[in-house]
Amino acid sequence: MSSTLPLFMLAALLLMALGFLGLVVRRTLVGMLIAVELLLNGAGLSVVAAAQLTPFPPAAGQLAAVFIMGLAAAEAALVLAMMVVVHRRFGSVETSALTAIKDAAL
Image (cartoon, rainbow, N blue to C red):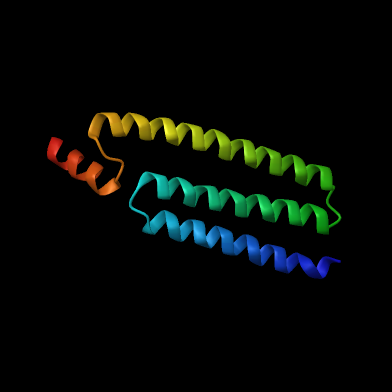
């Protein structure tokens, strides 16, 4: 039964690597938000898999996963609110435009 744990951890690592790559490569705030969500989903998958496939209590792993999901929802709401403010103020949500505006203001 525990032979499937490395497969779950590999899938979680893949999700986290894709999220990190997306965070580095993406130019828009929406793309960065999706990348952070991938990172958090990878972390949640690894916690749940470890709790289910090891002697650790499964309820604790599920509670940690619910906490990670709540954290992801709060982060998404906060970033979406910030994107609305940035779009209203600067007219764009691309990070390159925001840094150009910041450099011009200095």
